[in-house]
Image (cartoon, rainbow, N blue to C red):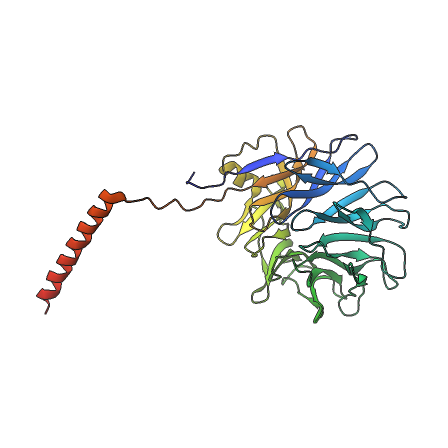
Length: 376
């Protein structure tokens, strides 16, 4: 490997004590240091937060109601986690925001309707949360929550109120998700000034699309649409619109985009292949590749592992988390770091080398001078 290269790594994250062995990795912090998800314990399903130094730690749940919690989003530095939990207030679940200092706090629900809310993602600084909640209009309306403004419904695309907010930009100003329309579900992008705008769908197939995540700067959206071939992962930009990413070779045509790097150049998700459901990594140069095969090519022994879904990627596009089946046959969250080769250092010429270089340049100058004199 070239000098200065970062070696690829892969490891399972284990699970929480008690219950059957089972864990799913849902999101990774921007720097790749913190993973959140869900695992099974003796009490029930429980949200977890994992770090390299501390391992997997359960976050508990909201008081009252059935014991369960599920973490789905984490802030840039890993200090704030969001998801949903059973609570005394909710019929099903209540969105929560967890911090290292304050623990797990319920975010409530939208006014009217049955009490039910789920948080899916959080801004870089942990101050803005997006998800869905029951409201007076519908049992599922996209929301945006802030400390100062509380939970605010975002409505839906024209003629419908059903909507789901799955992703938010780093600064909390842009929200993406899916809304019901008279034609089918449609991916949307929401801003305070422009409201909710549909992103359309592919030509062919049924009308169905959904946006899952947005790049740090808000320029690139990823998700899934329906094309003539089937469900297909997409990458959307303001200038290029919705572009399909294809799928892995073999199997039924089916792929879903789950997350995108900070600059929008790398997309991760899952696709059908000849081997079944597989995690993928995509870039413009190499297209869609099996993540497992990429790791094997970079020197990792993946014997016994099946990587089913890639769910999140770090800002630099190198750290990917998800879940799959481990060599023991259990579902397990995992973290993978791809190698990043840096250019080799420029060698030092030293005194002797500089002398040779000077002589060479002098010779080149003399030859050039003689050639010019012959043509004047």
